[in-house]
Image 1 (spheres, rainbow, N blue to C red):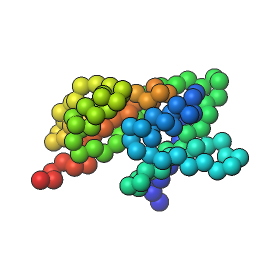
Image 2: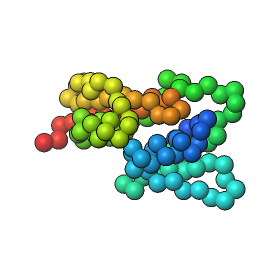
Image 3: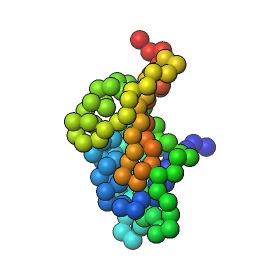
Image 4: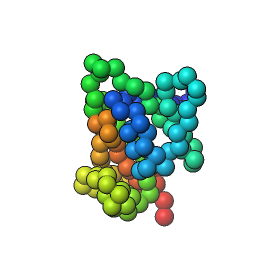
Length: 120
């Protein structure tokens, strides 16, 4: 068994889809009559499923953070900042670095070099 999909509830589905396409390279797939937009990355990995949030659902819960593997975190953050997405400070951890931001639904996202630590 593997984790292949993460469902995100969004107040603005179209804005959220464009965000993950623009900054993280996902491609949207839609099926006629389906209320979920599935985001697939050309390099594989888990799919993001974007679903319309109910009126009463709160945005920006901090119980889940989406972490994207990025070998050069500082360069990635610099490119995003030039394109309108500002990450916070780059933090140094146990042999890797990471930085955090929020998506349009206020979900915490992170880019991290943790997957690449120990590689020369």
